[in-house]
Length: 163
Image (cartoon, rainbow, N blue to C red):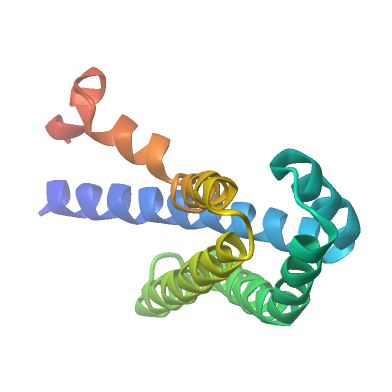
């Protein structure tokens, strides 16, 4: 029984770390795009050698997506604050587990919407640049947890299997 509780605690802690990493990444993207929209689009123009017409289409997509991105970031931040309060007061209770699931659900929705947005932006670009952009955005969006997950299953960390 004690072994099961230790495994459950380790899983919950690993999940919390993954969620926190995803939250940080999503927040960085949202903040950067919200605060410095022009700079981000200027970088996009230069990196992908885009013209005024392409940047105009992308700017419309970008401005249309920002309110949605802000809502996700605000909701995740609110839930994280609530989770912190619950964990400090009560530890790993059913309320904490519920909040972790809610945060995970919001992050999934956020990632799905980000991927849709990135795909729409990629279609506003010439095909070769669009494919490169979409590949990079997918890597950044989905790769936030990848190194942690890989470290948990790699042979170098076989000690995890002995808990």
